[in-house]
Length: 280
Image: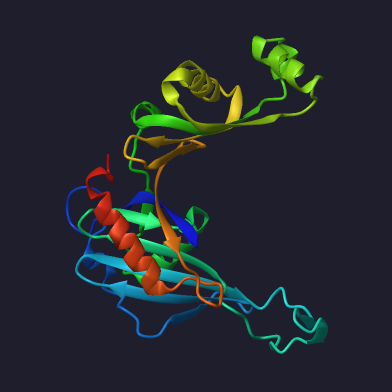
């Protein structure tokens, strides 16, 4: 069994009417994206391509996007059962679509769910290349750290990087780090602390101090991870405020990939379960 985490965002597009320059995307913005019976194949360059499957209805649009590349490709393949090598049967111009990510945009809730945040620019390129000049943009739900942090109830991870001049001023923090590692580092130091879902009120002073130090450029790469009272994971990462929802107990196919409808239906059920808390 596997699990998959979706981060939650707002999706905006250029307003074609008078008023605000950008508005939350509506169903009308996706008329160029029809439900697919067979995947759409999009070639990125001579070595890369994407397979795109879509479900578009009155309530949402759902994408499964798979990436494939002709490289790397080894000359031989190894048979794990008979322990023998043979020539790779895959042609040099062929590829397998083994890398997947999934995106759902709920028209009524005006919320975007994406399974791999690192792929959001790729997804935006897809939308913008095949839309009618709507200039889609993905933005966070939350506007400031204080509002976001106020909803955190438990703490699971804190990570930050010190500046290399920290140890020149002999601050209390510098002395503490020196004692911990037994020396004075010459370069930046990244510190990562894991918690077993500790109550955040015990560490409020520590968290607030880290935020102030990042604002003053004394540390960088601040990441704070925890859960809110509804069980949503919340993450501050480099000034992005991210809320996540997780689907559990999902089976992979024999190919090692996830089925389109299994992920869609599992995510729909999860969204319905937590519907009242999604945008809080």
